[in-house]
Image 1 (cartoon, rainbow, N blue to C red):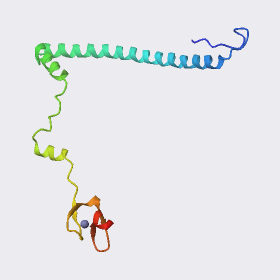
Image 2: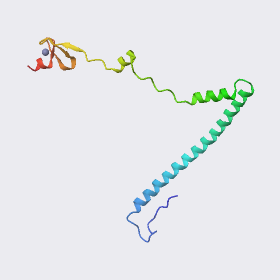
Image 3: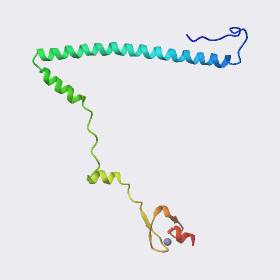
Length: 137
Ligand SMILES: [Zn+2]
């Protein structure tokens, strides 16, 4: 337990007493957290040991009953232990590349200059859609 200081320990109260005591409280909280983590790790180690025994018992039964050989079980374990393969590169798949490429912005024909312009560069007027350039004139 972190030692707190109280007025009088050094004959008189030190100016740093509040800081020292706050640090002692913080240290106590950290020590409590570490204790909790240690307890959890201890429980998990016990559970892991139990699971290891169960797996070894199941393996022994499977081999004894002739359901599988030890080598088959080892192969199956190795197979399941491998990390999954990386996702395929987008490469030449037209569907994937189409999905990965953003769709071009739709265009609108300006009623003044008759040019096709992106919809975000237009203004809708009472007479129709006008491009920003024509609108500003
Ligand atoms: Zn225009």
